[in-house]
Amino acid sequence: MEQILNTPQVEQTNTSKTNANVKSTNGLGLAGFITSITGLILCWVPVLCWLLLIPAFLMSFIGQFRKPRTLAIIGAIISGVLIFIKLLFKIGFWGGLLSLALL
Image (tube, rainbow, N blue to C red; front, side, top):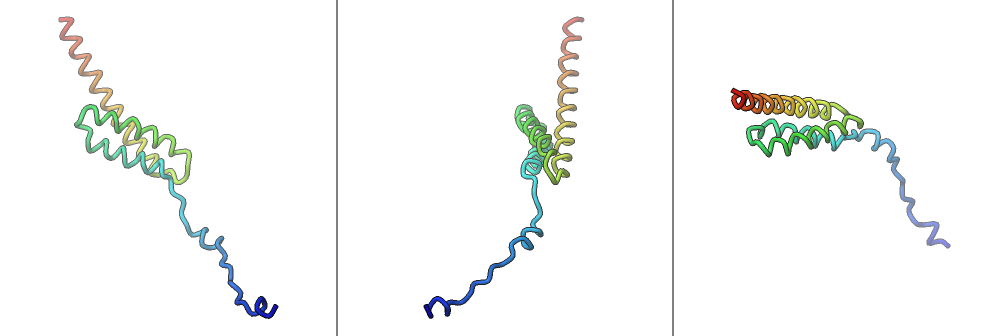
């Protein structure tokens, strides 16, 4: 009985104070942002650009529903604008070929 009474007491730390300082991250928004920047850099590669920009837009769009939203919004804007520009060039290219074929 004396042995139980003489054991040192272990202090329990309050984990709620340490968890309050941890910032939450948005992994999907960050992944969408990084993929859209990679798509911006590698946009001159035809197939690789589409393979990067479409998932980047989807990840950034889904990431906007989680906090923090900043990188997800920026990733969606970058990938959305690049997809729009690529589509305009595709339509212009095929429209030009069609007009040449009709002449």
